[in-house]
Length: 129
Image (tube, rainbow, N blue to C red; front, side, top):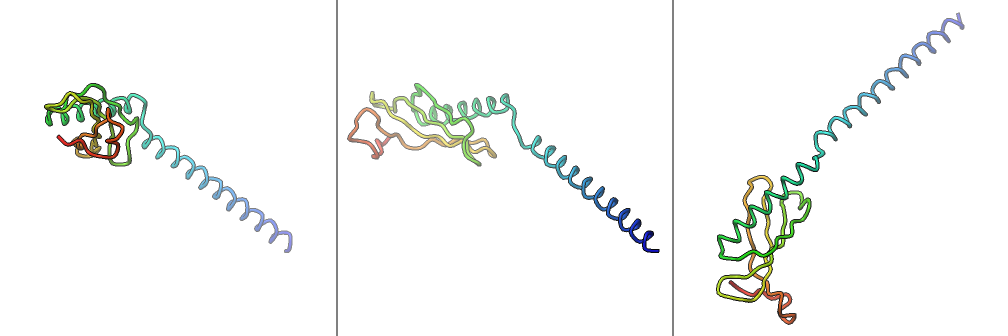
């Protein structure tokens, strides 16, 4: 009788061990699938950066800011694409910088106020439009 109990327990333990291994494999597989769905390809990031650049350029043009260069943050923040624009504001020959935030969800870009970059004493002060 004792031998039969031992065999039953051993069989039950093997079934339990098999179920645990199966559950672990399913969890690992689910993790791989969800990670793949969240990951973006390099092509998708390039398209995102192009969208940020185009949106920020259009927003700056609406303000009369002549864009010379745009530096796009490669990935932005969780909710925004970010860029630094360098150029000249309306009615001035002084080079300025503006920051741009591009909403990833609404696809709307907003440009901040001009910041002087030629005058080191103006660091931290807005140059005004």
